[in-house]
Image (cartoon, rainbow, N blue to C red; front, side, top):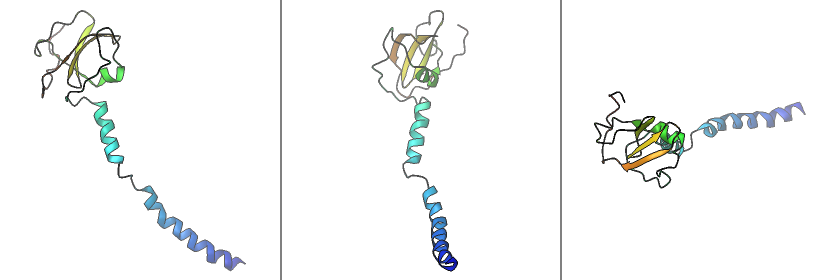
Amino acid sequence: MNRMIKAFALPILAASFTCLPALAQDHPDQDHHDQAQSQDRHDTGTYRQHDEWKKGSRIQQEDWNRGNKVDYRANHLQRPPEGHEWRQIDGNYVLANHDGTIASVRPAPRNNVPSHEQHPQ
């Protein structure tokens, strides 16, 4: 009986160990998914229309955080009111206050690398 258990157990055990590396391989779409998530976290500068970004509405914190703060003078934008700042997000210039309420949205020029804030407000 002991021999019979060993005769069946050893091949099953060996087969299970040889299958483990195959199960641990990455899914072919995993890299694409990771790249998409990475791009969602950082503004690439390419234009993307956001119908939800309107004057008076609130921008989501994750959208605001992935934007780059821009120098309004270098980018020919109006001076932001006290407590507001301009950010370039998804190819848009967005002016909002610190609680995320949008004051203005306009498309940024194509292939525009934002000039970061250099002047005191």
